[in-house]
Image (tube, rainbow, N blue to C red; front, side, top):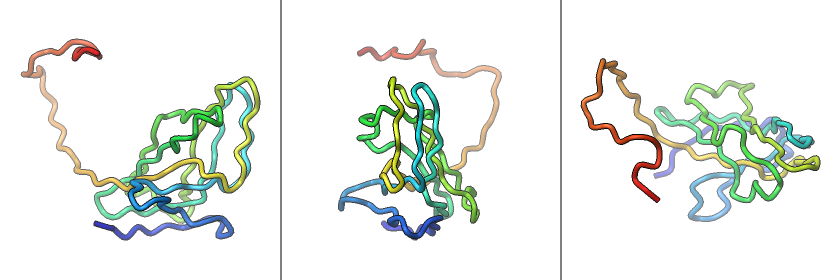
Length: 144
């Protein structure tokens, strides 16, 4: 089911975010300006959009699958855009680290990140002194 999502482009000369295939779960976002990221450094790439997800939805911001080919990695893995991060100046930005020995340039208009609009349910957090379930141990306890 399609939900209406309001968005604003900060530079209307750049393309509208778009789903590139019929089965795409995420729509692509473009770099609003050219960004140079030096080796071992972190850069902030403006994505030219503010997004207002529907009520009880959030924005999952992730690297496009080809992003690693640039020599960059998303610093925080994925980004979480809360439902109320939707003001007129709330432009999404993508935080990337250059893991190569050479500078990496992201050109204005490059498709860098993708967004998925995801429903959520708020939990009622209830603190307890002891958990009732059996311990499973550390990470990787289910094997390879």
